[in-house]
Structures are given as structure tokens and as C-alpha cells.
Length: 120
Image (cartoon, rainbow, N blue to C red; front, top):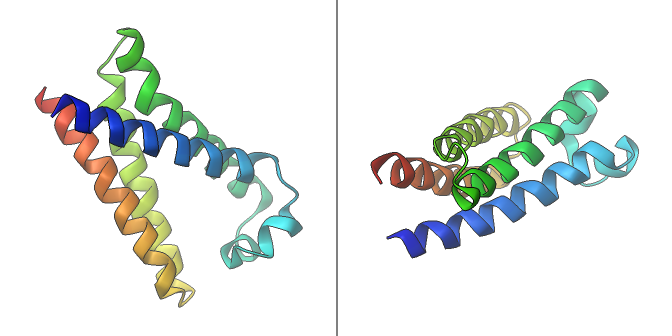
């Protein structure tokens, strides 16, 4: 079980870190070309989401890997579940139903990490 959790944590951590870094650093017009929701959000909100995803990605890996406050790993996972639920709601409001699938998968994997690390 620990090996499965580490694999999921690593993949999720990298995915959230990369997606968040992109949202936090790329010009908004470049992001808006591939993400329609950017046009309906304030620049500050887009940057906040990006920074939150970067920190969540780090939080999935660093606390457990270092042994420093490992309780923060499942907390980060729960926070990312919330981010994915809110993202799915946003996509539903914008009638972007195909995008919700990725939110469901990432949210479910984050929930798995939260459950696994709280239980362990």
C-alpha cells in the first residue's frame, strides 16, 4: 500500500506542481487560449489557483519524504480535492463537461492519498 501511495503522490505532485506553475507564471492571454475559464476569472484568482496547486503538489511529497510534519501530506491532499471539486463546478457552469473528467480523476487520486496517509 505504501508503494502505491508513493507512486500516486509522486505523479499527482508533479502534475499539480506543473499545472500550478504554468498558471502562476504564464501570461494570461496564453493560458486563455487553452483554458476558457481564465476569461471568467480575475488575474489574481488565476495566480492564486496556480500558487495553491504548486504548494499542494509540494505538500503531497515533501512532508512525508522528509518526515517533517507528515500530517501535512493528507491535509494537502484534502485541499487538492477541494480545488478539484471547485474546478469541476466551474467547468460545469461553463458547459465544459469533458474537462470535468480530469477533475474527477485528480480529485479521486488525491482522496486516495488523503485516506491512505491518514489511515497509515
